[in-house]
Image 1: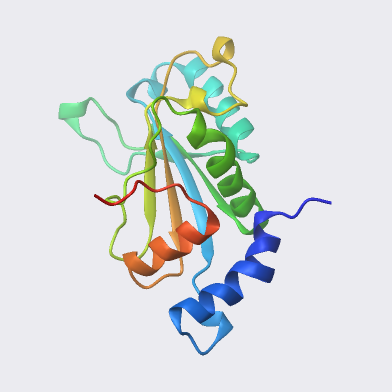
Image 2 (image 1 turned 90 degrees about the horizontal axis):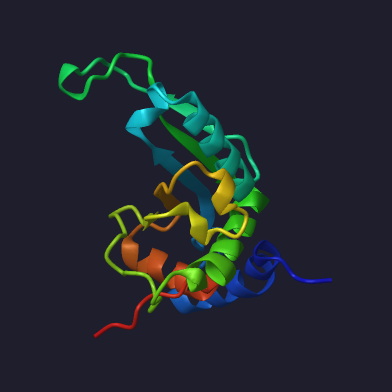
Length: 182
């Protein structure tokens, strides 16, 4: 039986990371809280077919039905009314988050054209990391003929790390392929 990333984290990675970071409690070791996948388009309000196709490929990628995000207020300059669908998001937690991260590391990122590793610059101050994909066809579940059009998406990995350097160590140990420092 193959070992999942979550099992490997609990049995091997977490104790090793506790020693490396010099933490007294095993519960203080950083962990994966959630992964949020989202996309948006100005055409969702007019093209219901595009919205349905986007929901379809997002649910195939994540294994969960996406939630529609709606505009909070009307903005005349953007021709936007309050309550219109402006995007879709999926929040993955627990085993699904670890499984998605494992797929991202081992399958999706190596499929990127001229992949040299992901940037170290998109950490926020709270220890979260965001990756933007210009097209959804890097995911193996997406069938090019059924997507309607090429669309970008954003994946945010939220960790319990207190700062970006601890989050970087945590994600590196999990196998995230960061670029080499110059």
